[in-house]
Length: 193
Ligand SMILES: Cc1cc2nc3c(=O)[nH]c(=O)nc-3n(C[C@H](O)[C@H](O)[C@H](O)COP(=O)(O)O)c2cc1C
Image 1 (cartoon, rainbow, N blue to C red):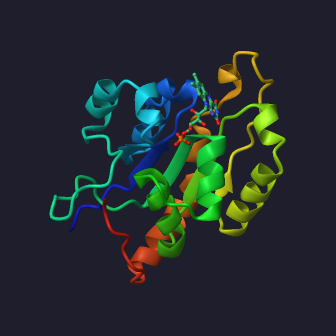
Image 2: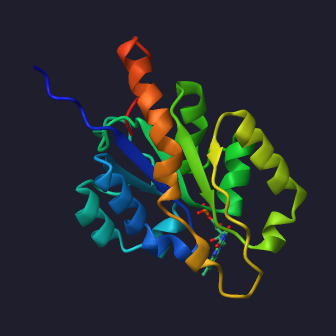
């Protein structure tokens, strides 16, 4: 009897103050039996303890595109969680501006049918910008699962206590189950990074 392959989750980490707690999401996903690889935006890299994250996942963090001919260091994703998702990355992703590896992966994930969830973390002044509402609308139309974080007040120190990292796992669990069904029926495999 063949052993069942573990699901592989990409966690895309953006440059928000809360990013250093990403270990909580990695932990929640690993408890669910998933393997995890982290992709940080170039700015996001400065917000996390890269060594600790790599020790926890067992995979190198990816942030920049590899050079042609370099080996791919992560297996293909079964699902993607963007957490924390910044104002900047959400708007670029919705507009298709693929100027970081992280947003490039997100833009392609739609076409590849990879289940994706976003956990926005931003303040109310950022959320008031009309582009943000439109971006969320477009991402929802694309099938992205958006968590329900209520933006915190600007200059008030954020809302770390209200940010539910584990919501990414809750949102993606049903999609991963149906994804497994699709894979069995010969769905295209996304490429790894
Ligand atoms: C200390 C600090 C905290 C920040 N927190 C947030 C945040 O919570 N949400 C957000 O959207 N941007 C936040 N920013 C601004 C982003 O870091 C900035 O827009 C950056 O360009 C985002 O890059 P990325 O989306 O590629 O990760 C913060 C910046 C700093 C310096």
